[in-house]
Image (cartoon, rainbow, N blue to C red; front, side, top):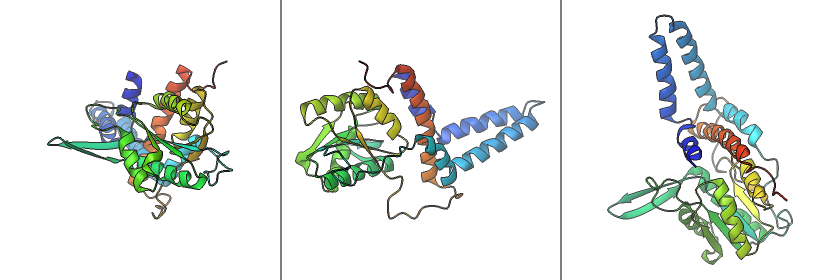
Length: 264
């Protein structure tokens, strides 16, 4: 768990990470024989960060992670599944005077809207929203509660929604959802998550003995005009950040045997 928390906090393209890397270059430049190498290092850092903030760079990082299965459009594509599972992708909460409220990250919002779309498209009867409190010092509400509210606003009947509120990781989600499915309708079910996360999520759920049918959430809202291929933008930097984290997380899951099928 410590390694997962470390990766979530530090293996990210955050402002603090870029500042730390830039500081290394500046300190290096003050060495008597280090100015030329530090200049090359800082130039490469700028180029890499610029590329990561463009759609072209983000697409290159996301390509190995992309699942090729089409988004579920009908009950036939879902193998007559009656359940949709939405995995949370982050939330922010605040506490002022004991009053607590929260909002979803853009990634989580796109996931829950995709889940609501699939729910209606296949005529499902159960929508499981999954996400707990990864950091008790920063998050006051389980993500599942915020996902549930968004799903209701998107047209899912409240009585159809089941919350999974204890998980902190994708592995936790797979095990917790397996237990919920055993009490409800079981397989088959449609799994909804984001582009960077889908391959690892499928592997983790299959390792838990489940056979999900993927329906990946889009990277952007449909009304949004996509940025130019080489134009830096915040969304592309976020996608690159998620991709880098996924490579680290996939490596960790592979070493733990959480990306294999169920053992006989």
